[in-house]
Length: 610
Image 1 (cartoon, one colour):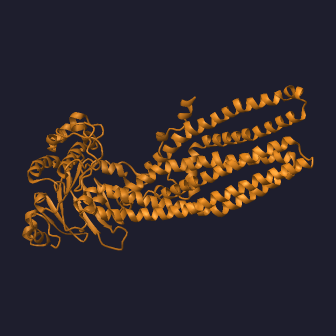
Image 2 (tube, helix red, strand yellow; image 1 turned 90 degrees about the horizontal axis):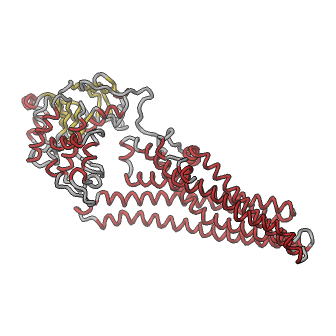
Image 3 (cartoon, one colour; image 1 turned 180 degrees about the vertical axis):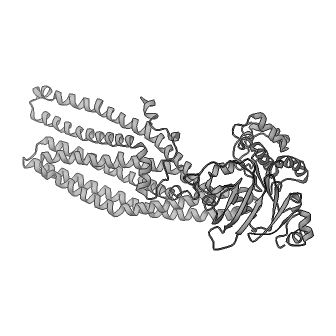
């Protein structure tokens, strides 16, 4: 039985069915509709619980009537069917209804729905473009993806199991009271109008406060994670107190918003307590007056008192739940702003996988300005032959990395086209483009996994022997064999820490080079590939890179011109345009831009003022 309900939702069984929509109700329905059968069952179960709870005081009232209107010797005979019915109700019917509600809620919705929302939110977010991640804290994005699952599920469940339950209980109770006397409905109706009016006044304020708290909490999480992620920089510059101030600001804002919110919550609780008292006093007084006038029996009085106490108790529980519901609603609303964003860079509907056999590249009159009016790349044309090795030269901001990012299709061109083996990359799937291009970047970041997993990221089906062979070519085995992590795992099984913090910059770069060697793509991009290596290691790896570059189309970027001087052709960029191109010796003989850059090298690095 348990296993059946547990398997009704398999969170990772499917991808996101489209883009999560904007708009809070649409966002909720996007996920709830995928398990609407379970939520309908929860609605039915909560209604049955309400009916059962309303029936208990009714049976008790009739039992009181039987006890008070029968002779003592006839009491047992006259009331035994009522006692039996009450026993069956409390020992069989209610436990069965509660068990059904618990199975739906605890075994199916709680684990399944929570992680379905998280999984599909992650599936959507990880497919966003680079700009999406560059414009926000990684910690805040991750926090939103994790928190939204619990908040959405719990708020939806609370509305059904508490608010809907109260409405059902009140409806059933009011219907019964109306059959006894319409006068008994007046206090309940008055209380309902006052209750709804009070909610209409205060709930928007609580909702707005919950949303503001969610924003403040998200900012606080982002700032804290940013400090932890960059802890080395914090330590090196002795800026712990500045980080305290940076985080303190967000903590103070969060505290202020929580204080305001809890003022309204206190008023909410006090108001509901007053309304509950009025309901009990009004209904009890009306019932006693009607009894004194002989218009209702003692059984009605015995039913009204526990029933109104029950409604009052549940309405007080709503006061406790409503703050949680709206706090979670605020979390969902704030998370929705991240999760429901349309994917910024998508494949065309008819996009096909890129097929690369030779590796020829053509930048055909391309322009790109990051959405600005001008600058970066302007009407640039460049042909790279299959197997040709070119070096991109230029000061910071000249457009070298942008050109590489456009080739990888991290951004779409504003005009022109990029062809690989004659195929327009705008018509190809993004993943197929990047599958045929290997990249070693200046800022090497590793996954918080084992050495083996990091290298095998280049080719997921690689064997252990192939991973070791790639590490050997990258001259990484000598340090890998001596690694041990905090769990006692050693060598290729050792974990490298977040972003590879347990390794030096040179070690991280050698792992990255091993990963590229294993990937074995026909196009290779080297962006300051040996910048973090000492001279001895760089010299050893250069031979590996030479072997790696054989029979591949290579684009290399380096500020240290000596590392790319031996390329087949050097392309000099300035302000997003090609100003010179040729071999190292041809450009020196030309005596132009490249020659001046070469002359102004200091210690092998490019003078930014050149």
